Length: 219
Image 1 (tube, helix red, strand yellow):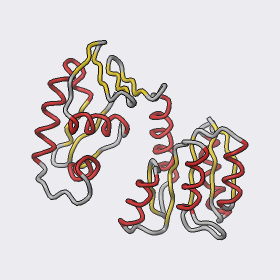
Image 2: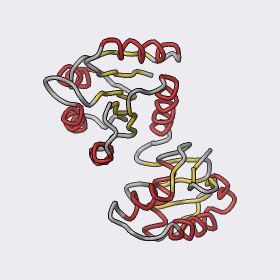
Image 3: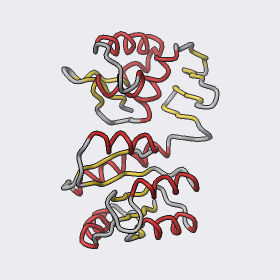
Image 4: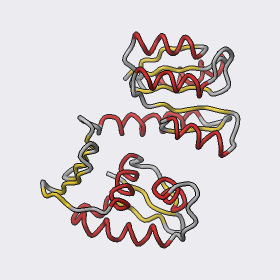
């Protein structure tokens, strides 16, 4: 798989490249957003790791331009941990956000998760064993049987599957499905999860309960 690492700090790029190549990823480097955009035009990348604070053009602006060209999974790096930056990044379509300093092993783990999600998307469909979610048709089938989900149930299931393998708090699920201004109670999520599990039948065990925290979809 081919990665693009974008960071104006050469030492940071060197660390990421070293760990990525150890995992047999092909890696191309860019030291600014302009170079990254040109490389995206000329290459097919499976994932981009990009810093936010860069000269000439910042990471957020670069993401906007890249998304106009190709829909590539993007993990953003930043020394800033403000919630606004994270939310803005997710609104632009990034897949993950890691605050510096970070463990290179953690970054590699997140890269594997993001690329795994991409491999499970075929023609705008999420496929996990007998579960198929047709994004364009907003249709869910379980073992070839169409299952009726309410809008919120559908959005929760899709959110869990998109974040396969990632532990999600109830608050994260509330924010993603009901919006950042939602002031409901955690029990709302629990109720919907119960209904979703009932509809998934034998595949309900894919949704794991994380005691005292939330949920995780796991193959």
